[in-house]
Image (tube, rainbow, N blue to C red):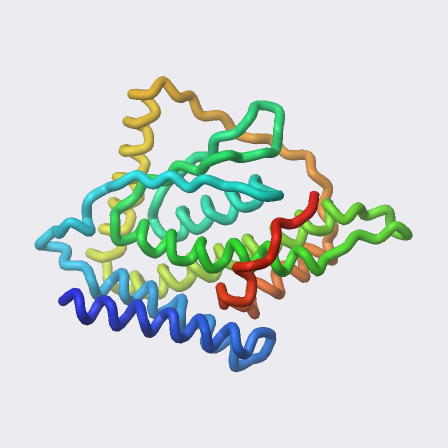
Length: 241
């Protein structure tokens, strides 16, 4: 597939995302949103020649610095995108703190490109949506709990939809499905090798955070009817803690 054709596909994806933004919260906006995800999945398949690897089949590493508030939720979104798009990653932060300074991601160049694109769109959108969420003094729900719950719902639904889009493209194409599994294994191997070289030991972060069901559902709804327009949220300041 030629470079010009690939760029046209990228332009089509961005156009669909903009159309989804213009019709956010409507059934029509939902259709554009789903078409964008489906096209990205199809693009990842059609661009690939399984028998003639290209530079896009190289495993690379990317560092994503995080800033502002709720960096742990930003990291969660990024890592879920990585999982859905056949990459692997880990977060770095202070022990005993929710703050995440950096997420390190490993994956094939073709998949990394899609992770970067979607994170750049979805992360500010998630923050913008959470800004409208407040707690309830009457119900004993703090604003920080409500906003985290919203973001959790948003992340969950977006990840599910991406997994579904990738799965629908791979369905019935056994060779391609196996290649995607191999892609994630290569990403895992690269991350493990890097960790061994740097003396990094991974540990799971445990969370006992409270969840407000109503805010979680609002975030899930936003993930279904997502405004993916970067221009609407780029200039907004960070969320207050």
